Amino acid sequence: MKVIGHTNILILGCGTQGLIIIKSLKQSGYNVFLLGEKHNYADDSRYLDEKFYTDVLPSSRDFLVLVDKLIDCWKIATIIPMGDVYAEFMSKNKGYLLEKVCFEMPDIADFNRATDKNKLMALCKEKHYPHPFTINSFDDINKVDKKTLSFPLLIKPNITCGARGMTLVHSYEELIKVYPKINAEFGSCHLQKYIKQGGAQVEVQIYVDRNRRLVNSSVIYKYRWYPEKGGSSCCAKSVRHNKIVDILYRLLLDLNWVGFADFDTIEDPDTGELLIMELNPRVPACVKTAVEAGINWGEVIVNAYMQKPQKQYIYKENVYLRHLGLEVLWFLNSPNRFKTSPCWFKFIGKNIHYQDMSDISDLKPFVMGTFRNIKNILLHGKKNKIVR
View 1 (spheres, one colour):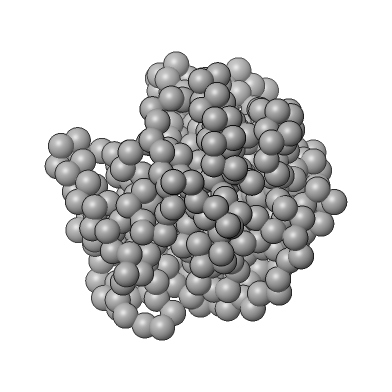
View 2: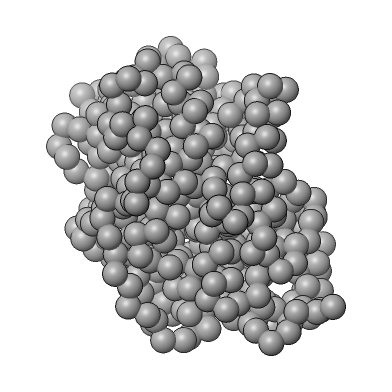
């Protein structure tokens, strides 16, 4: 039987970010539907009204046909992407989808410019936004002043999700040996100055509406991640940082961006400056930090999509989010396990929440997700087998 009586929202893809988005939307009175692959963590949530599974790639015509059928069958009002490929799908098919559902997303040309890490760095250089020293391509390395060029350098694929393909090289000899392999597997790459450890990793969420207004923002400091070199956040907290929000808002205006954007920045320990690293066009895994701090991002996004009045939220600092599964892996593998801050052994507190856990009445996602991750680690032993 079809769900009726409330606005129906379709979530594309998922992960642990889906747990809090689905729950918050359900508590706001919406019906929530999910389309994605099986075992995506949030598909076990009791807050879902319906879930649909597919192995069809979002880049294929068949995926658009599938989404189109769900929109018509279930009277879907709006769609929220939880992954880069799903955000790209919506941007690419924006003209067609906007005839059937409401949402905000940049045009595909602006989307590609923003999500291509190399093009983003080029704009930052042009507009003087803080970013690491970047070399456009391997072929341009000989054009760089030798006084400016120094190792180690990061080889970074122009278009990739997370840290996939990023490789640190410590010499020119290592660079020419490794670069062809990375280029062959991940496509065009650029080179970037390696920002040494010691500074914070800071993630910033911003929503810019169709009228170019900053609707809302949140800032998250990451303290631990697994693996320790280029891994996913497992301990973070909410903070305020108006300066970086202002910089990134102006950058989004230069990009003609509309909708939700999530930025990764890193603090240069020598200067204390936050440097822009990349823009992610979807809701991040650690968004629960901001939601528990007071910004109901699910509601913010839907209200903006549907041009409803935005609520005023009270945003709290020092709200902590831990990913219990990744925290355990971090503890087992890190030499800093007994000298880390915040304290690893503090598990309970009114401002401590868990990314891979919804609430006491919705434990199935945590139990099943943790079981599958343990199974994947035992079978494959690879980080990219862990569902976050």
